Length: 294
Image 1 (cartoon, one colour):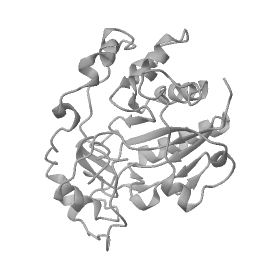
Image 2 (tube, one colour):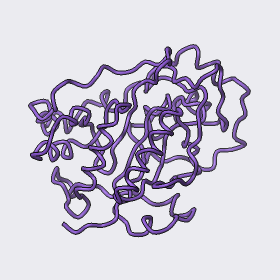
Image 3 (cartoon, helix red, strand yellow):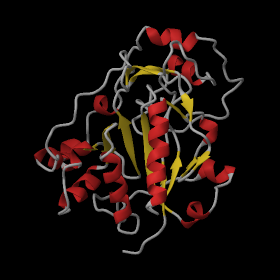
Image 4 (cartoon, one colour):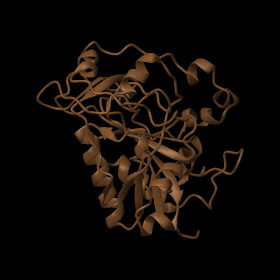
C-alpha cells in the first residue's frame, strides 16, 4: 500500500439536536470554575464542565481545526491527552493531528453536531491523508473548510485501501492502550478489519462499533479522579468484541435502526450545571454562522 503522511482531524460524533438550552450554552465564550479543581459534571450526553481549558491553536504534532466553532475546550485531562498522543504521533512520524471539536467553554449541549461532548471528555479524530498539513501550518480558510473522506468504498462496507493504512491502525492501538481512555467509537467495518489481524487483540475491547464513523473515530476518556459529580459508562465487555455482537452491525436491522435510536431526546442536565452556566456569564455578541451537522 502506498504510504502518505497521515493527517488526523478531530470531528463530530452523535446525531445533532437543537434546543433553546443548547443555544444558551453555545452563546457562552468563556470558561468558568465553581470550585478548586476542574470538574466534569453529569454524563457524556447530559452534563457540563467547570474549569475547562482551551487547547492552544498549534502544538507539537497537532493543529486546531474549525476555530470559529468555539469548541476547542476540554477538561485538563483531555487537553493533556491530546497533547500527549500528538507527541507520540510526531515522534513516531505517523503524521499530524488536526484538532476539531472538543467541547464548549462550559460544556453542555451543542445546538448542532453532537449529542455527547458535554463534559469535556470527548474528542473526535478524522482520517485524512494529505501532504499539505504534514509540511506546514494550514491557513484559516483551510482550517475552516477542509473535510475528511470516508475510509469505505462508496455505498459499501468495504475498506478503501486508498484512504486507509497501517498507520491508522497504529494510532488506534496507541490510543486504546492509554489507561485514561474509556472507549473509542469506530465504523463497524474498521472494527471488523482490526479483528482479522493476527496481532494482539487485548486492546480491541475499547474499540466499539457505532453508526457512521467511517471518516473519523471518537475518543472518550474516563471520568477524572476526584470528579465526584461525573457519571461514567459501564466498562466495555472484557472480550475483544470480535464475535456475534460485531456481526449484528452488518445486519439489516443495524443498517436501518429505529429513529429513536438515532435521535434520542435531550436529557435534563444536573442542577449543578445551572451554577456553571450562570457563573460570571459572558456571551458571544453573535454566532459567527449557522452550524452544519458536520
